[in-house]
Amino acid sequence: MNVTEAVASRSSIRAFADTPVDNALFKTLLQQSARAATGGNLQPWRVFVLNGEVMPRFKAFLATQTEPETPAYAIYPQPLVEPYRSSRFKVGEDMYALLGIPREDKAARFGHLARNFDFFDAPAGFFLFVDKNMGPPQWADLGMFLQNFMLLAKEAGLDTCAQEAWANRPLSVSQFVGAGDELMLFCGMAVGYRDPEAPINTLVSDREPFENWAVVVE
Image 1 (cartoon, helix red, strand yellow):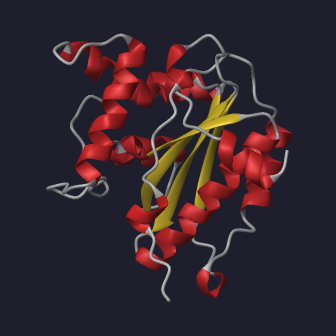
Image 2 (image 1 turned 180 degrees about the vertical axis):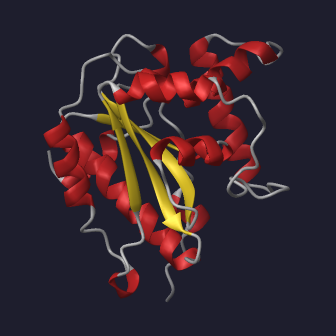
């Protein structure tokens, strides 16, 4: 698989098989991902891996954490203006249509969103933290690290789902993984092998036409 194929075939998988992820492969992919571009070579990513028997222990722990938590950051701007609002609305509607969940069934929709905190049944995952002293340029470095991992995972036959939803559970996650007070939780990443029978995994999100977001200066 070349880079073009990996980019074209990568998607956010929200239903995983229970096939285990090899620890050695996981480590190799993370090490390769660290070749991401990073300003000043700061390498701001701080990763905590969950795999194997630690995953059910984490889920059991999370179930005991019932107090509300303050999100680590605002995932979306408020208010979310156009055209971004419509893009977010459409992908949500496309996803729920595949799941057969009508708009009026709020309970079922919230239930699906809650599956974020089950890693969508992925057998493995990781949490990505960044030092609280870092700023927007270093957050861009995190994005490049994540993109590297998702493409390399695709090449290796694995599937992924980057999950900013985990920013809503910073205290619980930090406590379980033992992250220092100097670190802020940025996101989680579900890692595993897609369930080929799950309709949700057929979702392909739209992309805006080139002329909507690019200007060729002459």
